Image (cartoon, rainbow, N blue to C red; front, side, top):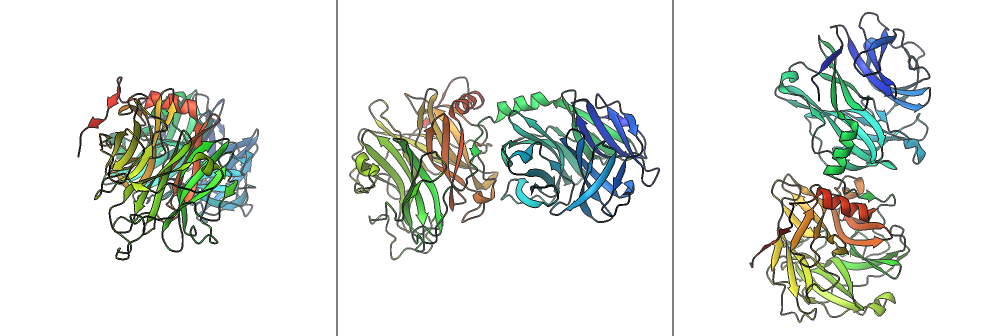
Length: 616
């Protein structure tokens, strides 16, 4: 970054907005000398501006020219060659309006935009699939949707993430949208009102190019942040542009004209994105792929936390369901393509049968350990196929005692033919201890079966010689992996789906909660050594999925993405998760690039780190 440079000196100059193309940057100015005067300047290098026209006209809804004195914040997008779209604020009518122009000089207003209290930016090429998408913000930044540019409706909250409480001391302004190979880069201004005044920053997020309401990466650091020496000058943002491969932001400085700040090259920002958080999961457009059904009394309130297994061309989903009696049971569905449900059974395939999972008559309502809105039963299943059997772990809860890990299995032939002849379930975790998130590795390692499970706040690793439990032998808690202090997963962590074997190691998808954001469950990934899974080879430094969309926040518990299932389908990794403890969702990513990026950006050290080993 360079120091701010004066690009248009003079106390009577006010910047209204910027636009740019491959040749240079356009800057719209209010000279404050004549009532209707708007000046358009141009600079090939983004700095040395020369006048283009002192006769820019904006015709309002009433057909009359709009005085520059009433205008605020131009945001301009190119619809196609010689066709530009201007979003501006008219202080007379306290509203946001749209105008079009073929020459950047003569603008004609054609509609007023509801749901927007500040001018917005159109997302490039967003009309290809779902009509037009734009970003507008003030206390939050929302997506706006339109099929025709004339009528608009409010879409999803983009910044801060949906479900988060906006900071009353922070305001936002749209800066620039730009298509890249990695998605839509959206640069925006954030201003935090502190004791010394508003401190502005330039930040960037990336959105899915096919679904611009879905953010795939969010920067943890600002591209630029106002320093103490400038905060007293009451800078206010004008716009962001790309010039000669660099990012440039423009600012009004009262009494000192317009200043420009050149930032790191845009390509460096993209490179940093790939380095910092490349493990992008793309939510499927069909989400939620399973919802509660009123006609299924056992699944009328929630269907969530699905486990998954791929067998003979079909993905089998076993999910937790809660109905009218508030008891958790297990339902069943299938999909061949990974996202469209082909079959969904009308009855549960597994119901509470044993004393340790049948709600006690003296249990409080709700119990101390109740989760997901249920008061007991069979919760959060995980399934693993070994040989000719499918093994199922789940959380057994009777409404009173601490939840424990239960274990059962079924013959593969019975499973495929929908004959639900499950073995009698047994408890495999210690009594008196809350133990959850148990998963079984899909093959033996060093002649032992391997389990991961969770006793707050750690994940535990155990080796057992046999899967023939009799209800008197418990998992031993041999090794553990801890939350990371000062990280996004600092509070508690738990295994998600059973680990997947890859050439790089065992891929473990996990959920976690951080101390700085204790109400939100997020998803991470790590790789464990193939021959010694107590060795953590690498671990994602940032979440690979966070609860940002409405279906991850509108339900029994806001702010939850909770993975229990994952399969490799073709070249893709598909992760199945519960949203807001209410619905079932899916996200996918190309497996090979996901693993390569995870290995590159998530490395803990040059050498692998071993879990700390001890006994409780």
